[in-house]
Image 1: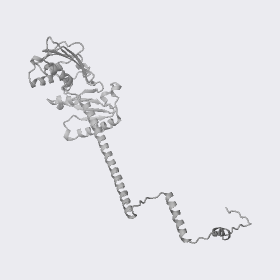
Image 2: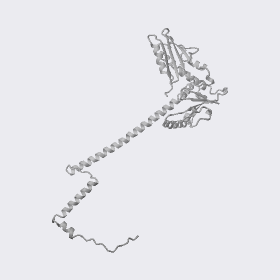
Image 3: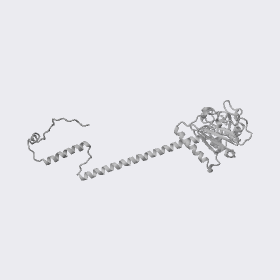
Image 4: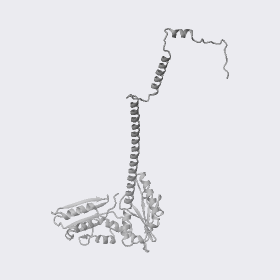
Length: 370
């Protein structure tokens, strides 16, 4: 999948058209992103300054932490998006987790208007990231509720779930890796092994420790089999308090949300690099063969030119075995003609009759010795 962006480009384009429209119009528009995020934009010609934006997004977790709607922490983060132009409507419209009332009259004019509408277009990303932030910011909490050590399955894309496991003094994020092509599995496995080697070096000692295993970690024991059936193994990151302090929290959250996209982008770029190298290597081999052929043709032409200059324009070609035998016979006949210049008519018949050696046959038989 593509990298998860903070801003929805489709929502941003629609809101900019509404804001810049010279004449008010009735709009009731539904659209989807990532196959599971639904937006509903409504605008009335009678009240063009007030528009409604409803969002239905799958919650990262269906556990006790987010058992009913959006948490107070998530609502607080949404209000910080743009407090002047955005008002949260409670309760939200049926079928949606959040409904916002947009007051375009409070949106500043000029270049700042695009900045404000861009912030409004990132509401879905705020909802998604705030849920994970709420889990990670309590990494060092001692009052862990009973049953929270159980893995929490987080789903922001149906085919790419990952798990958050709360442990003493740390939180572990586990990513099951799946690929369709076997070649992608090989590239990804090499990448994960290199990632572990680099992460264990002193230069990256402050980064979250990374581990890769072809089998599920013990913490995922008891999870559904279809979630643990992978061909690329399992990648785990141990997140401690130093990774979620201050501004590091936002960076850690987005790194986890975009890990699948980062891995697939790396595999795709590596596969393209290998294919380009193979194509370049093939072209170099073809060029070498072409040069050899040109050089051979040049040698043949030089031999022909030398033969023409020596034999007065007559071409000498290497004969085949049959032609060679025929020429040998012709040469032998010419030699015989040179040696026997005088011909006597009837001498051949006389030689066959009187000058032949008689054949003798012994009347005694013999036995072949074994």
